[in-house]
Amino acid sequence: MNQYAKMIIVLMIISIASGAVLALSYEVTNPKIQEQARQKLEQSVLKVIPGAAKMEVVQKEDMTIYLGLDEQGNKKGIAFKAVGSGFNGAIELMVGYNPSEGKLTGVEVLSMSETPGLGAKIKEEAFTKQFNGKSVEDKFIAKEDVQAISGATISSTAVAKAVKTSLDNVVKIYPVGGDF
Image 1 (spheres, one colour):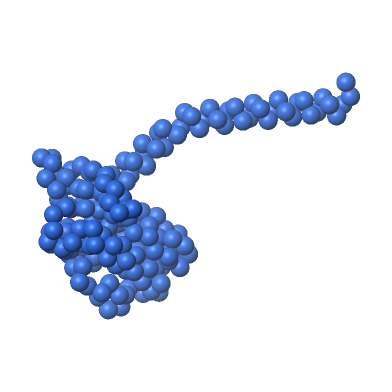
Image 2 (cartoon, one colour):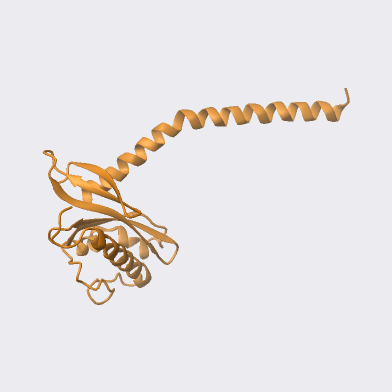
């Protein structure tokens, strides 16, 4: 057998073994990764809906809605994802809303790639807390009814627009004062 054929056979064996190791490691780690992602999602839902102890996932009109329930199963509010386009890419948020009152109950940044020290300040409680108690009637405009972060107006505006756009869609499904 010539030398080229031996090299090809050795490379094929190494490739097959590498592929098998990768497939096995995926099979072992994927369930753990999926469980951690589910737990992180549930924690963010419970964080933006005060008084909620568990969540229930509901599909309504092409939207995924998370119902926040207390220990007795009473509805405390709903949560939904909102996505905006920031300075360095997408900003993904979890937004809490109480349809009975027509007010937001919380906002949490799930993922973003904004500039550290500037746009990344949208993750800080000092910024996100200002959305608590905001009415669906508010404009959600940076530098008007949403306090923008100095030097990060694009990021602040992206969050405000994402919340308002998604909230408008949710209000069509769960009108103010209605049951949820």
